[in-house]
Length: 236
Image 1 (cartoon, rainbow, N blue to C red):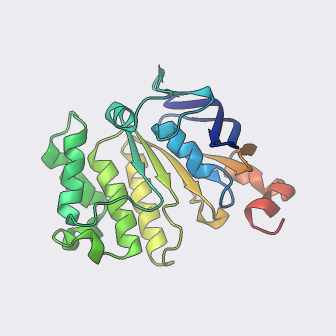
Image 2 (image 1 turned 90 degrees about the vertical axis):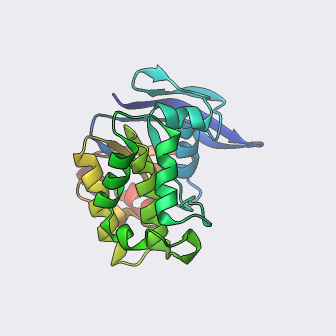
């Protein structure tokens, strides 16, 4: 198992945000966390990444307990994170944003190989190498955020709201690039608010509502869960 999250309970100040959240991701698997805004998806990813510390529960990555480690320690172990707001350095160019990721974590691939791979998977960024983050569209920033994570050469990707608010033209392009990442041997956890943004190559689906997992299984199995579908479609 690449990632095993077991009964996470997380508080932010006095509010309980996650309640006994458990999920797992295997080799070359794509796992999707679906839920409404505020359901706990981002909190789950931030807790895995070390930005938040759980009150109880464990996070295990490649059979190592990483619960409570600092974000830079989690990243160095091989987890790449692309946050919802992209998190790119706005005053750096595309090339600099990607290059800086090769400094963070050592890998069997050279920095040049990792940089070349980022452009290969996201070819649209090639023509923007010298463009600063402030000059990029929302979709381009999302691409750059994932490309920068790829340049770290992680084993696991945590991608938060990759498709939220993007043009329908951009969504399939980013989805195709993420599929390429999976075919390279990586595992992926994605958090999304929109059930219609679940691509065909998703292996496992979790639905989070009010900090609890209310469904887990294959995407095709969700069609029989009418009450859950009403929640994720916003009709409940």
